[in-house]
Length: 372
Image (cartoon, rainbow, N blue to C red; front, side, top):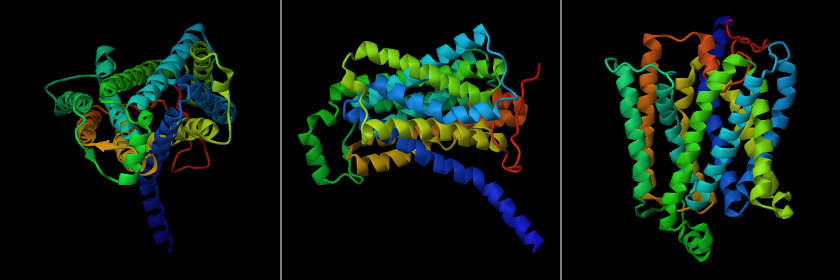
């Protein structure tokens, strides 16, 4: 009986990372759909970002206060300035341009373009010498080829739209969308929207690079995430006041104006950080990144069904090419890790994750501190 229980417990522990990552992709897909709903209704992108990060900071603050009280270092001027820049790169620039790009494209297209972030991060890591590149090794060659393939897929999606592919898109919803011309992005705006999305992805990649540096100086990840969300909310609020002087832009109601930023803040930021950190401890960043294309598939299906979005052939082909390139990058990264294993502390420092409870010892939080 004991052996059966032990076997069942082992199977549950092995399956938990897969279940968590699949569930997380549905949460992230919901974040994209809620943001797209707000974009379609003309919500100011900076107002949305301000509310989203404010809700995220409020949801993270209690956990940061209690879980980080023993590992939280003193704040320095250097760390404070880096947090200010982090709050500008991700909550303001990334979320702002991504939100704006959605208005010119679609939710499915946005989720596909976001898959270019790992490749962009790899290029920046090479530039800043945070990633090693040895062309004689198969892993490094795979990362280079995967990066080129990913950019090729993004370029295809930018230049080729193609015919409409009916998924759950009915004739009724198509005629309705044509009647509401403001919801259907013109061809001339498709390129502009793609450029906005790529700018957002570039800012997100820069955010990862800077965060990997900041977390070494401030190794209280939960507090760091909370501070980034708080600073990002304040900066987005200032940008919103400058771009839109109408007080009505800040109004909330029991509809998308409240539920969209609330969901995006709690699920897309708070829960996502926690789940990614939980899986990262046992599986590493390659495993976490490998599930990103699943979010693209979920968004493509749900946006066509729920938002009556038109899915184009160019988006499907380009998304598939980006997914192939992404898996080349993560495969190459996995080969590099096998050839030169990274210490656990370094792996944790290179990600945006939080101090979480280990899967095997759920009663005690495990913390990793940076060696002095």
